[in-house]
Image 1 (cartoon, rainbow, N blue to C red):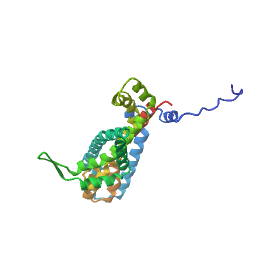
Image 2 (cartoon, rainbow, N blue to C red):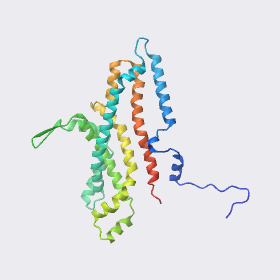
Image 3 (cartoon, rainbow, N blue to C red):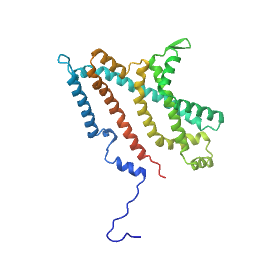
Image 4 (tube, rainbow, N blue to C red):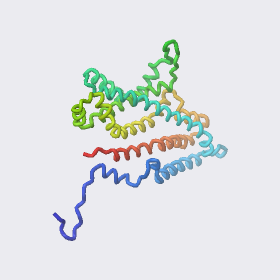
Length: 287
């Protein structure tokens, strides 16, 4: 039925995916997601912090910019160590979580229930508590076939962070597999595929696109959580920032130095978060 003359067409309700697509339209390539407005906000925030610190600096003390420039290389090394910890914890957690997630869809009830209990326990346990348990319960060295393998604090921290990652990846894998329509399983069974063949050749290849966005989001969360390792004595970016502040013994440097470290984390994690949204739109399942 055509609308009366002189009236406009009725508005069309867009799907949530279309709304997100319009919201993120014009964002450009993921490598350029840190746009001019975001960069301007960081520059303004950093400039205001530096200006406030300069106003509070004693006349004979070195300038804030000079102090930040002096300590930036050391703090940046600590930040890179945070990234190393995040990559290692994500790799270990992903490998263990994929196995645990496949165990959750096992046809054997003991395996399925045991993996579900392990997933729920580590998924809902506080990350800092797991870090403390790993630091206190794991030995300082392991003897394997007469070979002594040391376990320094940073390796224990990697293990502690990989446990909640493992549980969350397990849920991602389980949800991805169960999101595939049952007809895919039935078609594979009709073609005489075994369950293992169906998983590796039909189901899991379709799950990769669905699991990639939440996996990337989990990595961004893990990266932002790596400063927790400073609480258990690991020399990371937070620890080195505190050491620099202690060496300078100037309270006016507190905000600029921590803001510098925060900016590095933001510049690293923000594109990942935006890229995740774009992948969710690209791989959206058509209902």
